[in-house]
Length: 314
Ligand code: BDR
Ligand code: CA
Image 1: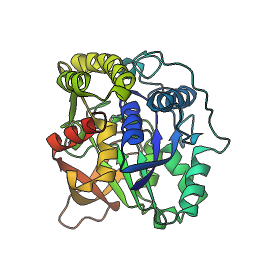
Image 2: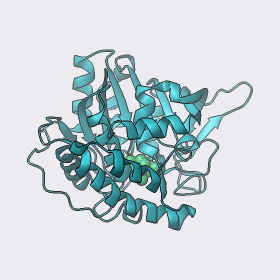
Image 3: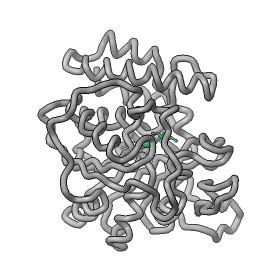
Image 4: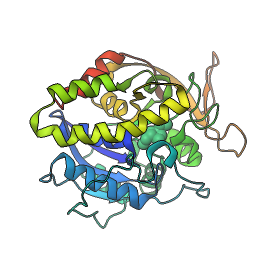
């Protein structure tokens, strides 16, 4: 059993990640923390609570609200063209009966990690802002977590907000760099691999046919929210009935690192305001010296990852 805290900006693919985590028998979700990003943090928190209720009204997973703006710079905007105005493809889910806890996301992460040294796997699928604040509260955090999987950045693939920057790092470069330089045991699950794993209409057809009865409402939600996500990817990437599994893949890798091939790289994040803001600068020289070592995913067993994702709903 892998004990995870998932940090999300619940968005469509974040929602799929939460649903997978709550359905997987290999994962214990110790808490979910929220951050601005795809939408504002209140909407992200509300979406998260509704998604937990959709997974199972009986679940009692603490949800802690986090940062409402970047670590150091000012907020620029949200991604409603990607995820819809409400962040979950404009699908209306019933309001949740559960509410968020009083602790902030950063406080929650720090307390949980300190109460369970060496046990907690952090999975971050939004801006890195909450992790940056958690590190500020406890700079020994890197020595107490089990591992950290981050959806963000890209080394070899193009960016998705600018030619070189991925949304989660672009939206808060200073937080991303603080996390990268912290010494946390990071696996970066960036566009290099997330763009190679897809959830498709064929997968949804399979789920509709073979999904467990108890998961019917979840599968209906996936179908509706992904219709929006597929539409965005048709406009942006010419995909038909298909979208990358950015955030779900990150959780899958956190639980099963064997799904990917990684390379140790020293990386820094461009914290300027130029065209390359938010870019991952990997020092690929023979004798790298800039930035701190992290594991960067460079290849993925896409078929196995996609099958694994579907399996918990069938
Ligand atoms: C990331 O950006 C967000 O829109 C997605 O939820 C994912 O975390 C992909 O760049
Ligand atoms: Ca996300």
